[in-house]
Length: 457
Image (cartoon, rainbow, N blue to C red):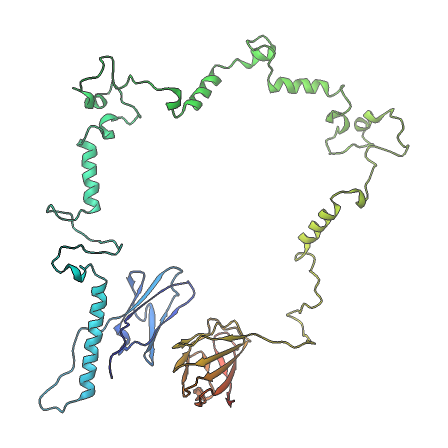
């Protein structure tokens, strides 16, 4: 055979649900020739995943679905060895010799794949005058620099800065604010030291003598409020009316005045018309009824708490009633729908019932969604029908398989499809030929397939 497939690497992003990943159109002689990674961590076969190889298709099944956002990488990693031994006494074995050449091509492709991901110079920079391109990737495990033209590591830069902050230029904080109080203190020798020997500064100037205006002080408002609070008059003075701000009284004094007015003052004080604080005027309560005594022009049957309203007198009655009904629907009230079927009762349908048909996407691996009862697919080559993304116990699944204009396409089926006698049927080979195959799932894990109807036209 010839080796025409150049792909030996494929990558996906996990979704926390999918556990099977398929590497198609890849020559693979042994399952151990695969390297499987989650992010940058290599996985162990059998412990973390299993491999099934069929028709140059490798299906990798994880024991636990990769987490959402996790990178799934699968690489063909053929051993760098040559096991074909040609001797002078053997006849020339073309197939064995070609297999050895194919293996070499696959090994070269794997080396090319690694080389293309390494730090390299472009072909146009053969003399080394260009620059290495890391393509926005980090370069790790780099040693600290020694020669002048060595690359600088983060650790080296951090250490250099730390040395400068301790013994470097005058403007480092450790020099001019050694006690970290936010200012240069003339009384602190370490703070004053950087200023020693400077010329051209007025004799009266010292590092701690600089003044600020209010707008330059970050906590001015807080400090001013605290100073005002500390200088306030004593409550006992300004409540008596003898203080500097005569006539100003405290909340406590106002409350006391109201308490004095309430028992004998105006009728509308709450303490008069709602003495028991129950939110209404009670005719049976002498204190509540007292303000109404002696009123004229009021019907004899009228009492302060006897008046009632009808719905038409309430301005927001409809809105409030509708809101109360809406809140109850689904809890204590069931929404009315004459056509609603109940799932736990036998039903007699008086109209045609139908399900939508899903047209599957043709490809080496065809995967039904599992959310429909009926599927159709036109085969454009020899294909494999994968397990539905989900299988529902008690559901019927119908597949319409159509040959393309060439015909003779084959269809392999995943292991979740169970067949009578354990063997899947051979499809109609005619161009545009149609087969209809149905099945039923009893357990939600497999589908028991029935004898197909074939050769529809």
